[in-house]
Length: 124
Image (tube, rainbow, N blue to C red; front, side):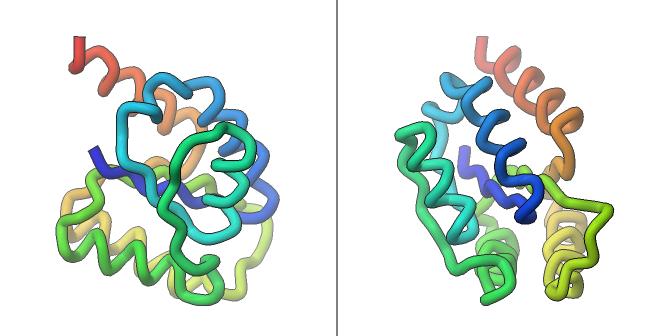
């Protein structure tokens, strides 16, 4: 499975913690991320992550392109709903692409945990 990992600045630590908690799951999959998020995940977990540009510099759009080309199967995007994001149109476009192409997207740890748990059960 090809999984995109994205997190707004105030949610990067939460995503790293989530990946660490589910390390065995993520080890089994091909990981993609926006620039800084991907570098932090690799640094903190040792996982290999293909990094695009940072989100505000086009990384969200690069991942969106992969979604449109059916090269991403799942998106985990820890959003910060309490802070205005200067690239909010890119974020909205990414979520819209997930909806159009029927790619599951988790925007918080609760949904992400449920998705991971379901996928782990389907592999047993």
